[in-house]
Image 1 (cartoon, rainbow, N blue to C red):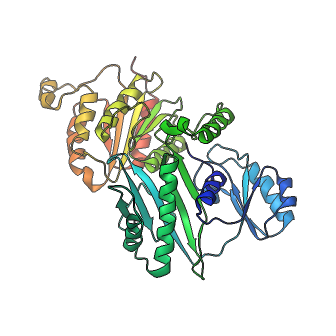
Image 2: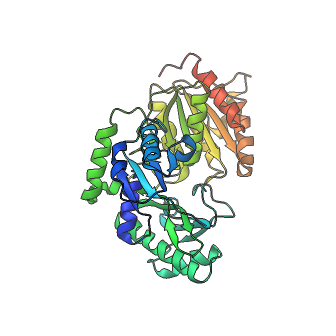
Length: 405
């Protein structure tokens, strides 16, 4: 469950993480009784990313401009969601901006501290710029200072950032969270630090252990129970839409990008699953390939799904085992591949959706070769490297007569 920004900052404030003076706005007329000084920043309180690009973040300098901007933002859907609340916040001039996060890595079942000297970076797409420290034992300030040093920070700034990371970790443990993120953490000319934006993701299995969070979740469910896309409790482990094209991705970015691409191509996305994290139904630790196998079976069991679009970007754990999972799913044992082609005919499995697999990254070279050979022997598998082509193929296949399930 993802909290809204104003809720996140209430938690930050209680933990001693510095946040700007702000005020919750339930109606444009609330701006007539604003308690903070202009200029201010008005922010739409929705769960979708890229609010600024969509027009949901506005800087205003007078009450008249603020009311007009608030009226526009209240009526601006972002990611299919209209805000019920806005956040008015003091404008802040930053010299530098950093990225900080504490995240639960389900692959190793340990918390990980993340830091980058650049903002607006996706924690699920780490590269050379993203620094990380795995909390392997009981947490101590050593882990936070180690992250600061790896980020190249020094002196008072390193100490300030380390203190923030310690408080983020304390909140992470105290509330049973999957993610605590500050993006960006701003640094002023005088060296003052400020959390300008934050994100908190609650572990859904732990909600009932926290009465305060359970009440928040109940309100969110009641408010959005009729929405077609419920991203509030989905945690991006899964998204339920009743379309013909099911989606499997290896991260939030790959799932969202694929979902948008299918919509833009005129297709109808169905259930979408993020295989990076374990599913809510998992009672024991799972591997990536375990989740791939389960995801394929879950989508195949959905009568509305005619095509499964797999989009894996960058790298995945157990990459060498992934093609075998796909081969087993389409009921074609890799060891018996030749027996299906001895008469020159293609293998056509029954009662399964068609598969379109997009693999982008050097780590997938061997997997692509294997699946390309498999593709030549079955009519139900398409393997491509370009996302646009994969989406076009999936949309085309979804328009064909469905296999009877």
